[in-house]
Length: 528
Image 1 (cartoon, rainbow, N blue to C red):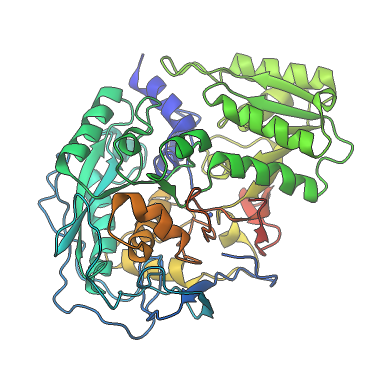
Image 2: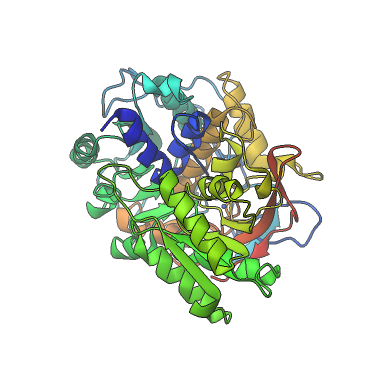
């Protein structure tokens, strides 16, 4: 199998920020991407951060710079050789100023929320002596593993930043926190690992190296199905940048965290949100399914049944799963699905399989069949927006139910939230694109660096001890955590579900601008 055929499969099921970058090569591989606060009821997006009693406001990556709070004048940037070898310590991100994109950090579980504050609250705990510590933690530093996609010469071909530039972006975020005093008065030290997403044996080696190096926690997950949960299997906390599959999240609890939504809740919001908007009224539904993650099919059918839509109102087409050959989602399958749905009288098409809606719409148009489309945003919006092949005209008006912030930057009345603005400021010092850059996918990766790092900092700062097993608990005590674009609102309350996406809103595809726009900037509470 050729590398491009392998890459096509990765692009359809890979981690959010990796797929985000791959989308620009849709002509080579119908690729994609991707990249979720509390509903405000206002006419525009308003991301509130709930502080907790005793907090001292500061800025943080994901959090803008508020005043006050102790900071260490001696905290230095996490630096290194940047050699590109797995496990190398990355280059310094250089000097930073107020801004980046996340965080709330009180002195552990310290009382009830004190209410919203003017910007994300990133605080340094008053007391630094902890009752428990773990591997990767010393009196002066915390070692954090960071997994970065590295396809060698394919990186620039696909629009992916070089491995060295990826390191610089993350190092800048770590530098930011270290200049605030680190976490629990300890310096954050990143250790970088190359992820060749096309090679399972390479990913296995990276996973084993992380374990051997004794990192306290890891940012970003591996891709290959057999390695997807490799880090968490070793009882090392892993902050996913793709939506975790809920059964695995529970199986490896409390070591899987994410700023995105786990699939059970993502699908529930998709179905119930679309139903609340009246998109299913009197319609015959068609579902594009796959078998790589069969629980997604069970979830969507169960959620539809809960609102009175049973098998007699549904037609299903399954694309299967062939991870060894990348053969799933072929043009012949898309055509067969379109013929089946047209014959069944399907008027609205749903999906659990990524990378199929545009293929399906192209096949449907060829036979004069133009149903309506309602998409679940497990980064599918980026697949459409960043496609290098034309989007069928019949997809105009396609609705997406999203827990991410995608589409908001094209929407009248949108204003950049403090987390995104400050992450943009941090990246601009490196000459890198802003998180909400609409033309360079690297910008969204930079936003992910701010968001995922901020989630981990919030979890560490709020946990009752620096123990690997306590991070999910810490995140559930953090209150509302402000995240940079393209992440959406996050307010974890259940340590058994330490993932984002507690709110949703609708977006719509407009052929005129070839873009998504949020049709209502208010965040609505999810059915969690």
